Image 1 (tube, rainbow, N blue to C red):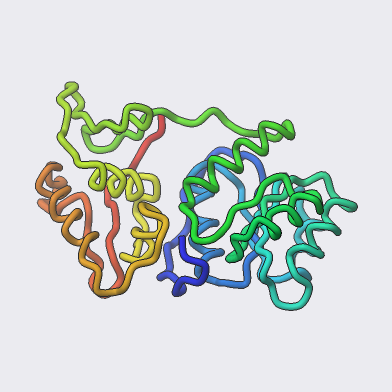
Image 2 (cartoon, helix red, strand yellow; image 1 turned 90 degrees about the horizontal axis):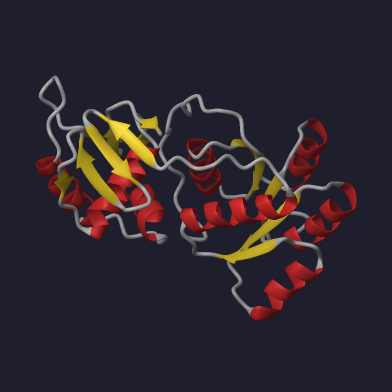
Length: 251
């Protein structure tokens, strides 16, 4: 994802999910905080957010935090100083995010006690994988991931990267179409802008004139059956983006 992306549109309330590890996302960019918190909630985590060191300290004191996703470039006290404080005051794991990709910055972060380090831009799915790996190493609460997402007579097999109908017929999808469908199905009934979808599927921010998402949505609509009201399962929200309409169940 980009280091500084435009604030996203309101994604609405996150769906009810089983309680998992409690992750604190600390970043001064409102759009990044919103995007990551919604993405992590959709993948079973409890999530709190903070915009600076003051909010971080208050949240860590008030709530049991298992892992902190900590941006290095923060107003006031920077992420390196805050990481040092966390290591002396809490057992929470720390993954540092930064726009700086130099080897020196990575080494400094790890020497200060960070459990992992991820340079921007990055794909949120890579961050998700690193969070799960760090929590497993630290003995945190990581639920076994679901293999399937099921909706309206279709089943997404996330291990095989396949979409099949209820009677087992394989739906032919390109890699890009599959990634887009998976992203939409992971965050159903919420408006996702084109930029958010590009961030989540490809790990980079595209210009507002990029029509790649529109083309792939059109192709997916042709391959998926229409909903009961005759509307495609992927709804266009004028001026905002797209919404995946069906309810989705994890198996």
